[in-house]
Image (cartoon, rainbow, N blue to C red; front, side, top):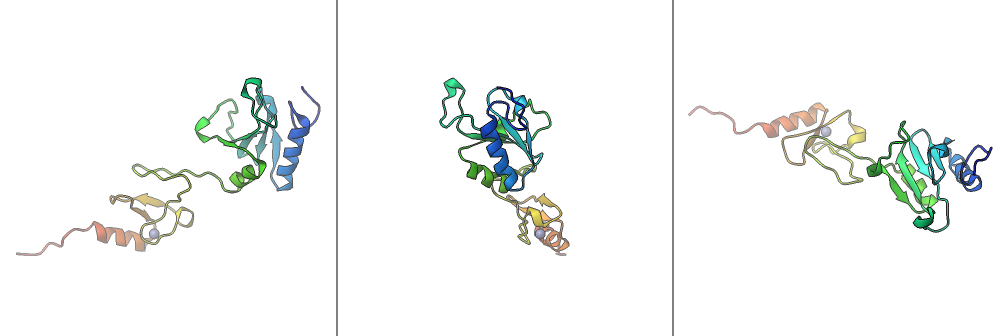
Length: 165
Ligand SMILES: [Zn+2]
């Protein structure tokens, strides 16, 4: 069903209700339903793409979905990034996911579990509190850009002192 309302190509009433809930929490909401065949969707703060449920219970054979799907907003809306999409059962859980964004970190050798924030092994400051973090030659070791931390890393890299026999 196509309508003249601002939100919702498929189910304007339900989609407008959810859009209002997001806006009441201070989020900017844009309708992106025109890109989807099955469910309405909204763009939240130009950062997330969220599919709105179109039913009260899941019935995939009838293309009915009772859950939300949250994905990072991609300027190419046709590109599905299933690795980054989250299936979320309730609106409250969607709000929690928006307020606690899923973060991923990488460097050459280290892997972090979901939810873990990389931390300097020396000053213990986390990723958000330093200018940069770098992997060290030591397993699991990270060092920030702070001169004191670098000095401690250098000390630990230096092997036995050379002495004259
Ligand atoms: Zn440090």
